[in-house]
Image (cartoon, rainbow, N blue to C red; front, top):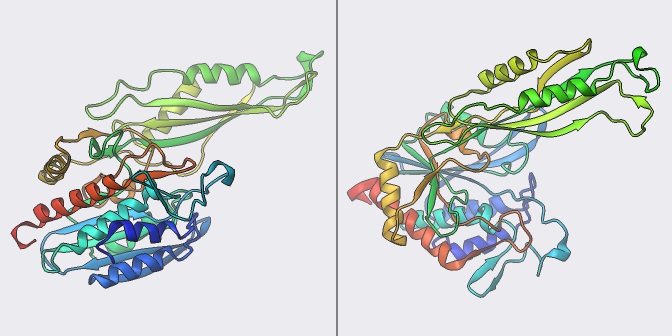
Length: 382
């Protein structure tokens, strides 16, 4: 019953696919896609300091325009089950809503797209799906490598949609045309440990740490046409000292920068180094290192396909969407390296919360949006 988004979504939710465990969720999706004519490839990637991940790439059609849909089947842990009204992996309908972990983020997007694709003739064009089970955690052996695999096989696309929840309050009130990048770093200041009564025999790193934090508390930029100003947040200052009569030997500052399209990770790291270089080290040693792999900032061009999607949304909801670049990062950052991509999905305020849910009417509406868009995207043959 691939054409029934509610039935498919319930099947997907019933699989406790907490990253990276698939718990049968890709088997469910494989069966649904195969039933409507897709050729399904199951791919496992591993290495690069992360756990093995199972992924899925499906394709139907060999000609015409090429549309890629991307998403993830993995979910975050449910947390304390006492906060849930019922089992998070037993889908529950109540008051026009469907409850379950992954309902909003983002098994609903996958279910809606598969159901919409079921209504599109096989010869309309080429439809592809890139589905990972590693978006909520490391994101190392998921979409990034899945797109490399597709590129090596010349599986190009004209336009891509990521089914992440992009609506703020009402279905279709927003789509994301880009995302800010994310860069995390650690600054270490090494001084000399000593007794607080003999400061001349020590070198306290804390005053230097404080000056660095002040130096980082500076305007990075004024924003760009589609992005707000980049912002740096210090998330931790730690010297590992639990007593009051010892000057600590060293300390660390941890921070994160969410940055716009005026920067790359490399130029932003240079900005941090410049800010640090302006601080008097007072005899201490200062070092800076990136923490993890930075996420890229990207912006997709405002094209005719974006207009088609906006018109499809307006036709279903009665209003055109706002264009946004807000929020955190998503796997769209990997897809943007190969072609234009936007995010279009349901309302997301309940994602990652207890009693995560969606409105069933919104699921039907999103399915209609995807179907209407595909008809217009593929043209008369659809």
